Image (cartoon, rainbow, N blue to C red; front, side, top):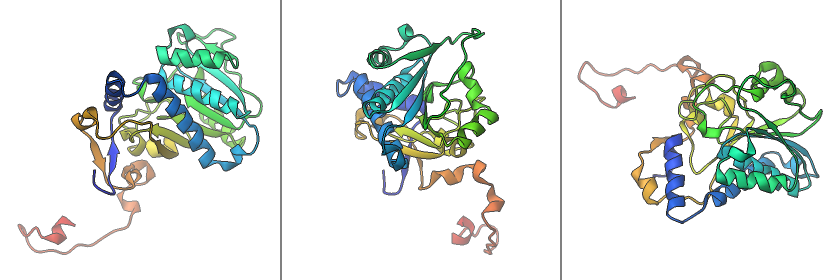
Length: 279
C-alpha cells in the first residue's frame, strides 16, 4: 500500500487470512488469541492511564465463539495485574471452539464464570447482575461474527437507559473487534448495539468501523497487530478495500454534505472536463 492509505478487510477476508496463517503453521489460534487479548489490555491502559494506577474492577462479557476466547485472555491478564474481574459467559463452556475453550479453562482455574443460556426464554434467575461499582466493561460477545440481531440476556445492556447508567457511573466501555450488534461489513446496527468508548481491532480495519453508524458506536478505534504478515499469500490473494486517511469522514452519522461548507466552481462549457470539472 502507498503511504497514507488505509487497508480495510471484510470479516470473511480477515477470517481467511487468519486461517491461512494457522494452516501454514506460522502461528496457532491460541497465539493469535493471546496476542489479541494482550493488545486489548495495552490499548485500554494507553487510552486511560489512570486505570494503571492500582487495582481496578472489570466486567468481561464473553460470547460463544473465539471473540469470547479473547475476552477470557483479557480477564486473565487484568487479574494478573491485581484487578477484580467478573466474567460472564453467554453460552456453554463445553461447546466453545477449542481455543476459546482452552482459555475459558485457564480463566476457570483463576476465577468464577457466570454462565447464561443462549436459547430463549431465559430462566427466572438468568439475569445479568453487575457489581454496584466497576471501572471497565469489556464486550467480547460476538465481534465480527454476528450476522443477525443481537438478542438474549445481554441485550438489556444495550438499552439507552442502561447505557446512560454506565456513562453516568464513569464505566469505560471497550469492544473487541466491533461492538456487539454492529455489522462489521456495513456499519449498520443489526438491532440493539452495545456502544463502545474504545474499540480494539486487529491487523486491519473493517468496513463497519468507518461506515454508517460505525464511528459513533465504536468510539475511538485502535488497531493492534497480532503478527499476521501483510506480504502473506492470503493477504495478496484477497481483494482489499482501500480508503484515504481519516475514513471516518465517510460516515453520514457524523453529518452530511451541507455540514461541510459550500463551494462554487466555474468551468467551461459541456465537454470541457478540465481540473475545475474534476474538482
